[in-house]
Image (cartoon, rainbow, N blue to C red; front, side, top):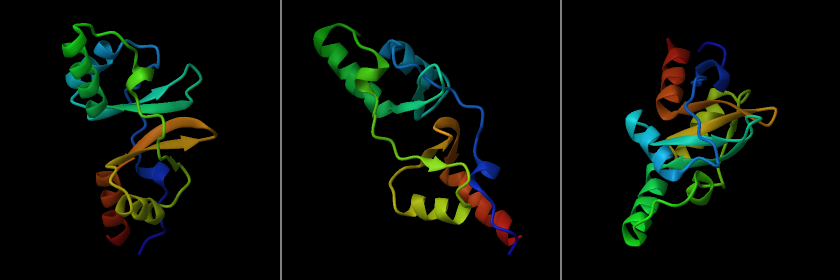
Length: 132
């Protein structure tokens, strides 16, 4: 087996992010237009504040249909308790994190800032590459 790779070797670095003050209907359109299941929510410094998922948007849409108003921002609907992975974590540990979680992707943090995202597919590719 080759040397163990790091999360930073396989993570996606170019992410679509959302701002906490963004209107929820605008954020929902971004997720739909880019075919994303969710997106990280960051402040102006790049610090991760949460994640907004399509499920979160469904809650907003249901409330909007009931109240006939799309009021609200991303910060009202996002999940603030987010499990993250450090960029320097080895891919074996990241794979174990996926196996012990229902999450399909994790935000990757370095020095307190969002630097990427790693998915199950990224971890699987890294495991495959480690054996070839």
